[in-house]
Length: 177
Image 1 (cartoon, rainbow, N blue to C red):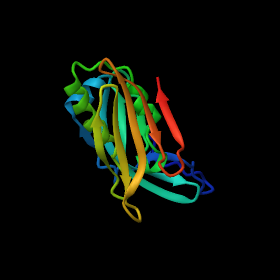
Image 2: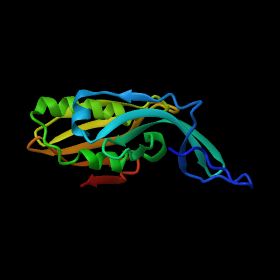
Image 3: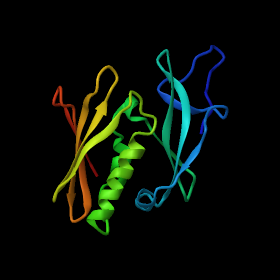
Image 4: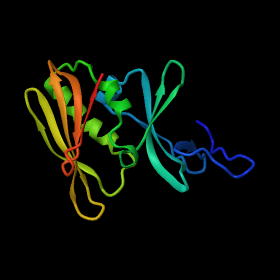
């Protein structure tokens, strides 16, 4: 990971996460089903920092380290960039052995998606149907409310897509492979 880059004029690169060894607090993530689905990665979380325009940002982020070459993928916290398209695409198409394994995975995925979240965001109302899994992402910044309605399309114990809908604006984003 890169350390914070500041040039001779005191300018930094904006909208990028940096590693500060004094704050990182790196933690390995071992979750049985999730680690099996993402078998080509070692999973970690770490406190990273950087800047967005003139604003300082510091947050715990999910970090995936590719086992074969050490390449890192940083997953922005949900408060910063919404649900990670990159992370979701990594799990689409995985064939689970059973509905029970898919259910366990769903709760594990919810947990890692909340890494670094603020305002007490949490997932509630998880429902498992024949062709979809649905749940709500709550935010309690000023008052508790549903921030996003999530649907995961499933077919033959495989995740086909994930749709995230803003319940206020009805803006919908679908992530597919």
